[in-house]
Image (tube, rainbow, N blue to C red; front, side, top):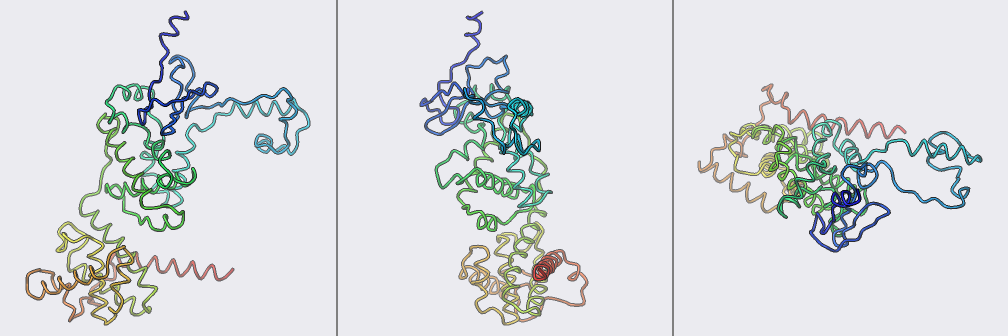
Length: 404
């Protein structure tokens, strides 16, 4: 019997993440730690037939506890079990041990980090975003199944590494790339998943700057997490363990990008223009973008990046109304562009339009107004509706806060 059991045991000889042989076995936890990358492995010596998965590792429902000879020293009046059951103080040791037994028999969530990432996506980007991206969160923060893990170990080093759980790799990086805490790691992964979904056209793009400023995370941290998650996803596609969800077509992606750029530009202009000037520039910019057929794959400026298109269209509108002084610097700050780049692109488009080298349908003719107040299409335009709604909501929030 002993020989049969020994035959079913497996020795862990190298790390699944970095292939290092510098390992430390922690028998009391049923784990093996990699001293180079910090990855925690489930103990491979546990028999496949037993319930080791429920006892050890990330999927553990129970954890080993220390039992002192003096049991009374462990009895407290404000512990989590006591608060949970509404008891303010426990003087009876047998009653406390009963509460302990009830608490230990309660099944814990085996993947609390995944729930933390989901909570951050919902709080930062909305419940709708969470519904769309929940499968990416679980793919990134939950380990492979036992069957998939067996198949993974038979693959080559590169594919083996890419199939490893992204959460482990991201949270074990060097200081400055990983977060300063578990919560910050969860925010980094949440932002990376949302940004990846925007890049793939699964959902509209979100602006990362507000999240970075609020939680003190960097572009490098988000980019590293996004790349790691995408690598893992591609590896799953290679193994046919996942498939790509429906993606937006080129028209939808272009429209989303133009809409988002419009929102950012006019959020900035609202702080620098009067109410009348703001409205005039808003409608004029939308009219010039409509002449360019922007927001579709047949846009006249399809070869120009969306943010630059919105910047030069807004700059043309500001120039028409004589408000262009310092405008290029303000527009450049919104997207991290250069003011000289915006001005040179604008000058080139105006010149090419005047010479007939570029057909713009009059969008860069700054000698005349493009907005026609009699056209109903402008009043119903979705871009303008979004900007005006956001501005109204912002004013209402400010008014409400001033009442208290």
